Length: 276
Image (tube, rainbow, N blue to C red):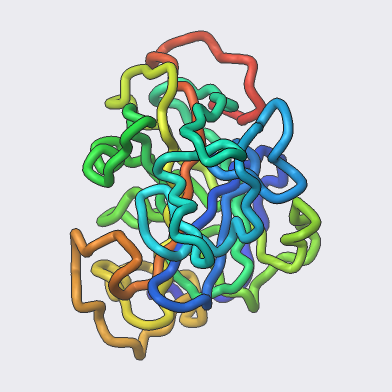
């Protein structure tokens, strides 16, 4: 394991993707993806045009009742696998970001209650009826941690591991204001070439916590510092392919955003994300 505990500063460019995650049966860790508009709408910030008329969500960082795109801990009818409008009717969320298959992009997210762990990003080409199996077909590859320097995990290339809250960089701003007390992360992921192209994909953000047990791979990962993980914890009951529905440990959070993917080799689109 790595012994260096120094924070590694990185690039401070701004492009945001905000996803909302979930844990198991109680409200402990919370997190959300910033920037690319998602299936749900934050109260007072995303309910109106051009991102509405969606139901406003009061707790976008607490979607902890399972579902591949998150279900509200306070209202089980708010299942964002199938977004609704303000009247509770099916709603087609707009595509708000465009990517090119095979390119690398920068994503931001905020952890509002830190419980170690890692994040993953996946794409499903069927946004109307997304399933975990569909998302698992196109996992994004973690490239770099632009603020805290988490290394790549060769055994699990889709994981972006979280630096502990003790390493928070107070010089990095967090937005929006209602989550300013959270810890901002900025990581680069590569869109898989395998996704080909889609006019409307669902982009899934998952936060897998590591405060109750350790999922497969943690004991072999080169953590930059012992404080990045709780090595004394037991292994989780499931190693791989555990139920991702909020019913078992580890605690997890999810959310989905609506994006377009252009074929590999396409000219760079006019988008907010910084693609390379």
